Image (cartoon, rainbow, N blue to C red):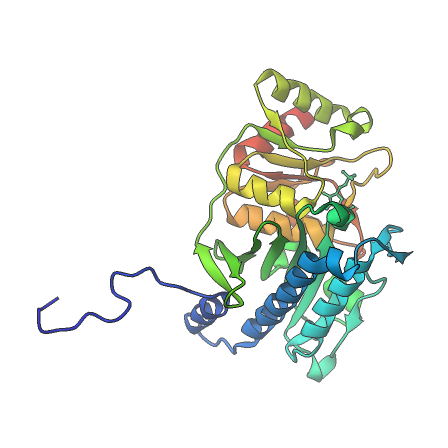
Length: 337
Ligand code: FDP
């Protein structure tokens, strides 16, 4: 730079980019973009900040423990499940670009707009995954998936029953020692951390890649006797190869570790849950999209197929899950076939 020209204020300094600016930047580069997508992500980010705060003060405000009801899956709802669900619903409900929303906690999806009034997108979410861990201060998370709305398809369930390959965006927010927002809009994976002092999610890693391998498996090994044989064979093999075992029991927290350190997370079919325990649309699809976008893989344990290609027949359906580093998912698949 010539001596008489002053350097711009940002020259030589690290750039600070918020989630909002990052999305706006992406939209500016997408021809014909209307900005509607930004509104949806900002609603999710707002809900996430409110949930992050509630999770931090839950013990003080006495909102830990059972709510007294159970959700559509027959699971006991925690007070914070209900609070988080309301936060996300109220933040998303006011966005005119959303046609249908569905929460893991609710029996039926909510049709917000239809026909000519229909918004462009649908949002499916699990407001507080891993909530049975809340009382003991373990990391929990919100998971979301964004799909396009087809105005020619009538009925909320029919609209939502799209395979994971049709997701236009997916992500999770981990409420752990820091609040981390991990997002894909189909062009790689970006990671943001909430700076509580300024109330913004700040970009900390762009184009995040999962390590190709990693000798860590993450599974509830207490269920091992009821897994299909191939999973037992894989575990026997992994133990002879010097693998470590890590299982938090909170999907978002286990997935986050797997994404950053490599390895594989498994929730196979069990006697109690022959289809697997995790929900296809609220949990498996968004995480499989993130894993693939980060260079990893996501398959079901049963038919050894790609999770994202499953055609959902109901919005609450479950699936078995094997997600993580590409080489490690292949190692599992090798023992299943
Ligand atoms: P939780 O029941 O605490 O909500 O799908 C829910 C989930 O947690 C996942 O977050 C977690 O990975 C899994 O269930 C844990 O299941 P197990 O207790 O059967 O291992």
